[in-house]
Image (spheres, rainbow, N blue to C red):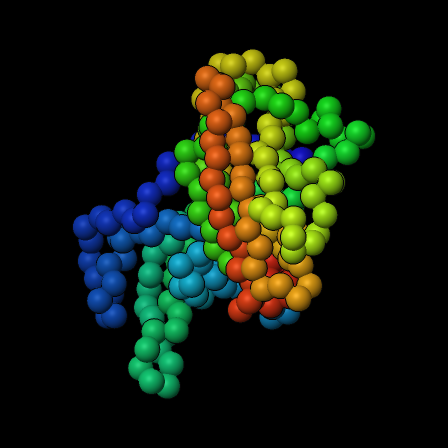
Length: 242
């Protein structure tokens, strides 16, 4: 498991004054967002953002070969500057050529089933849900928790009694946190995404779910959602970093 310390200040967009390039984009403008990293055999890199924008990575602040440390399909948080746009045959923007200012990998996991063997390791420590959103088959969270220098585990779990059948819905999911007895010294922010693909039922194009979590005051977070995969490929998120 990765140590979940992402104390990142995330905004929708930062705009700074500066000169413009020939396409009308300022070289001092920066955007920040989440997406899926993709690469090919020729080491061409791109990121498909949560809002469906496609970023073609043609420059960066990193040394050559930096993209090799990212797996195809890995979840990332990227800070980038737009250098230009690429048009399709109809004159519509189909992608952006960008410079990567900074990039971080984001924890991405599947749904875990609770068993007698993993019940203790999953933990039952409080967790604060600050924000959440769905993109295709991913359910993403902005979470906060107290810690110091220990390794924390975050999981989205369901009980094995929740059979994969259309009549048993909504799926009951729970965010679980194991602080591993870490000290409550620093209030950390973590971003994590969970693939919902294991909830798919053959012959059905959508399923409903409810996700819950409990914070430090004992207040329960509870939200319902629908995972509609009617227009999604069988597998759209090939990489899950545990």
